[in-house]
Image (cartoon, rainbow, N blue to C red; front, side, top):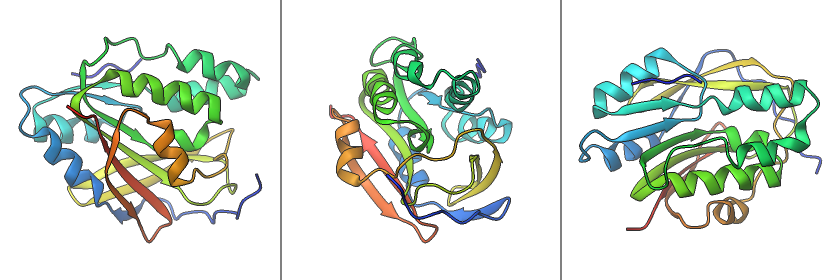
Length: 205
């Protein structure tokens, strides 16, 4: 089921449609395979092949909430200061109604108040023992672009950049990411060769 609704080191542009290995995606899937009709929330954008992949692998209900598009809309309208309040109520699903969240790298495009507002909502949505997959850059600055993370297979993600008005904000230290998602525990964390951190969070039972 789909519903579409500090100064840092500059990051060099990634080649278009680059494929990188993922260590966290298989673990995310393993967290959910034993659940009957799990509910997933994907923070966007809509990628039909991803919808097919997750529904085939998990027999799940998948809801796409394109938060990247909301960030872009607020930035273009000069309403960046309103993002925190908006994201605090953006996800209207009931508390503890979601088994898994595909957060991708959306946190990298938010300032601290907006990131905290969104993270608080995600923690609230997850069921006990639910899982959240997040990607975090280790470099800030660079070209203004978002990235579509397209599942190539269980072990690889295709990174497809697309236009953005706003680039990544300052990179998040691990301790700040953990504080952001207070109420969840870090199950796995990996630093990949493409200078991206993958983290898998679980909600305690």
